[in-house]
Length: 471
Image (cartoon, rainbow, N blue to C red; front, side, top):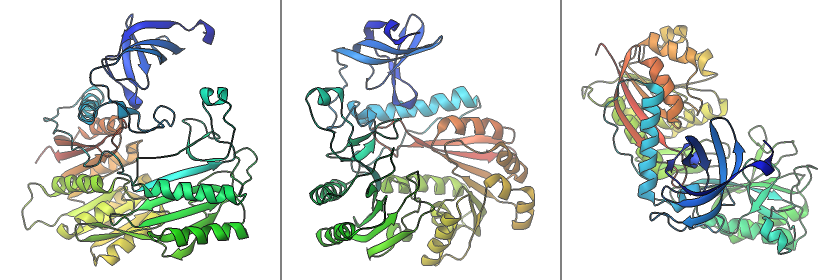
């Protein structure tokens, strides 16, 4: 159907929240997905896509705001594409996330479930992230209104417009991280403009300033990685020196030259300009080394809540003298593995990324933990019946897979290994539900605990405890 023939739907009431953070309404038995709405809004909708079973639309006019609708905090709301649920009070966000977990486990999993525990909300709703990445662009993206006002296409630094690799929204203020992110970003932008530094162009693949990554830890110490698209110039040297002088809280100032066609720096050398090459995160009496390429949960405080749930599920009901053999699948940098190691006989961690495994070993060393072993490789290739015969049958398996969930071969090996318990940590309850249905052959779900890691987004973590049915 041609776009000009797409209908305008008038006086439509938004009734719920759907996938990807979109709101939904029903028109003539057809579902309509709408961004930037909350249940109770009455709106006129301009349809943007029409399929046989659903439509997508944008708000043409907000007629009557829902009573629960609130004002967004961020000035970039609705343009940036992030934090879509700012217009929904946090208590309501938690309600819908709880419902999302329930719906996925019931409708996709279709297995017996216990009562689902109330979701654990985030202590901080803003400034909760410990990592942000910004992109430099030689022409910042402008809205239609800004173009009508004649605002020029100047260089900018900020976030990519959703689904647009070459369009970058210039960010004036971001509330996802403490204000250091704004002060650093704006300082660097001013210096660059005042000194005629070039910003990156995604089409010509030219420009000095390409991306910047900011990390903070629980002590509010800062790591900054400036990524240049061209070899470092004298002006680039002066920029790094200026940042070093102006921001004493940046204890790890690093840079990288990335002349590839993509922005990833996982295969690039990151060099120290000033300070050290890492930050240290603290969790209880443990320390975790976080380098420029390390994975660490981006909401530090909620990561602690999440790991406490996983640890409690792993040891709940066990004898005080029991020291189980634990397999930690998709271990990353070994955060969960090291977090539970002192109550275990041994923890064996498996992870695809070799650099993450090296970080996991370092994290064991700096904490004096000697009962962990880590292996790098594709999970379905490493975790085999032969691997388990060699290393011992696990009493407990903790698994924290990526959004796609576990490979079917991995599920089969877990079923063959028959651990007493499985603790399944997931960032995607839909794929988790699919995997739980496969595990239902031998396992019963005993507890479900959602955890909110990302306020103002649709994302939700979920931890499930399974026990072998013959126990």
